[in-house]
Image (cartoon, rainbow, N blue to C red; front, side, top):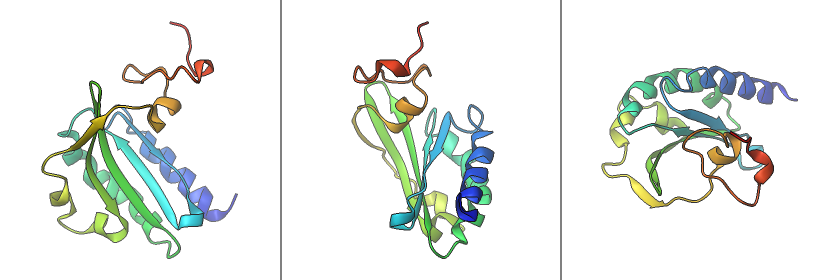
Amino acid sequence: MSIRSDKFEETLAELQKYDGKLWLRILGQTHWQYNELPFWVLMKDREQIKDAFPVLQKILRPLQDDPDADITVSFITFAGDQDCSHGYYKGMEFFEENAIDEIYEEPGCRPREPHLFDHAYPNDPWAMKDARFPQLYTKE
C-alpha cells in the first residue's frame, strides 16, 4: 500500500468515528486512475449537513493537498423509496469559505435502487436488501 493509500485509509477511519453522530454513515474510495478520492455521506436528514460540513472540511483538507487527486463529497439521504442528493463538491470548491451555501435548494431525488451503502452496511435498518446477494445479510 502506498503512502497515499495509507493516508486515505487513516482519514476514512477518522471520519467513520462520526458515523451515527454527525451522519448515518460515510464511505470513501480511491480512484487513482481518475485522480479522484470520492466520499459519500449518508445523512439522516438534510439538517445534519450544517454540523457535518466543518468537520468534513477539516479532516479532508490534507487529502486535497495531494496534487494528484481531487476529493469529491456527495451528501445523500434515503427517504422511503427515494434516493436524494443534497449536494456535490469537487476539489477546492468544498473548502471555500461559503461552500455550504452551494447545497442544493431542493434535493434531486430518484427511485431508490441498491446503493454502495446497502452493500457496505446490509444490516442497517435503512438498508435495501438486494436479492442478488443473500450472503450479505445476517438472519435476525
